Length: 600
Picture: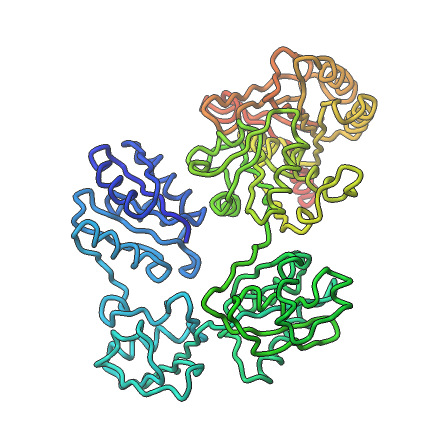
């Protein structure tokens, strides 16, 4: 669970919020008395997966989150605290940390945590939320077992664990047959609940391109042959050269545990403890054993191998029991190229909000990061200027190669005239031709789409992109001028609606004029042209002009220019706030002709 955000609505409650934040290591967001902005902000935090402690009425929080409620298994903890501090209410994510958070805050404030989930409030323990080193094999059965216990059903527990002590008096405790045996809670009228202590580390290796099915199948057969269960595994470990191997990550997802990695040098330190050292493996990857070495490196210096290396055609695995000084491997780095739209959170996808919330570091042009507002607060950020695009992408990739979760922030959509293609280009280049390191190449890459400027402009003014269209950048910094001219000539002759990106710069003022003159030879002088700038921001500007009247002086670097086709039309509205000053513009697809033809 990431650090919570403490949201306080009124200045009078700020001391209480600061007291809570200081005690739990959280940050405070003072939102003022703008309820709409507060609702939006709480919703943004929720979509980003951020735990929230709202020092405000529960109703405010409920209204903020109502449109987004869907999956209780993925929602972050949400807690409401009254401004007097007399009540603490876990509203959502009770069994994902909200109940514990509420109880902690209530102890701090000497108040009451209004925990309403039945397991916590009556039984004293949530059967579907075992402690971190325990795994419940069948969480889907916990609800029925809890209900049966609450109704007084007879129950027996095979084995004992301190965290289940609150069940004494309701449950008969039987001794476990051995230390490694699972805890089995049998409640009359419900399926037995099976809890296993996650005492083991699974080391794995594989040939490049090993199929996930082979890896998973080999591991499960190996565990079954040794009498071990998947629920006993705490993590999957391998060599860092395999951090981009699909089979390793598929196995971790199958087992619902994290995957982590060690460099070859660290695995080679385990050579004296290996049961199956290999000179062939050493020549290939720089250590004498991957599966056994990884398991031992993670399990600790006093750990022991429980299952020596076993092999399938393309996969290996070994199992070690955790010792008292277990070690942490490095997680696979992640680079998310996020399109944040024009900046406002309402035009940001939930996926982008989630990735921003997960990110350890934000990278991008400073203005774009600034537009994130509260979503950037408390994050490490690395700002780059215009013209530093390659440096920006290289830095983001290399930071991801160090095991960090990095968000490369792009306005609009990261794959449309933005950083997505440059990231791919750097991955595609050989290292000696200006590419990135091998570690960076092994990072997970996520392209998260956003609302592009052409989409936003067309939607604000109507539906100018209602039929075939294209997008052309008029920047000649990377594309030869002759190529650009050839493209807009072709688009003019084909009668596309055209979105011109980067229409002008301080030194480049003539290409847009040239494009206008060429377009006038192929479509009417009164073809609608939309000039849109600062879309979705307070200083948004929408202007509609006839093609013949398009003047370069009306356009700046923050403007996207949409030129209609010969079929594009205007619709007047009495509402001057509609479209662009009371004018809607659209491009018909031909439905009227189809209807006329059907009627004929």
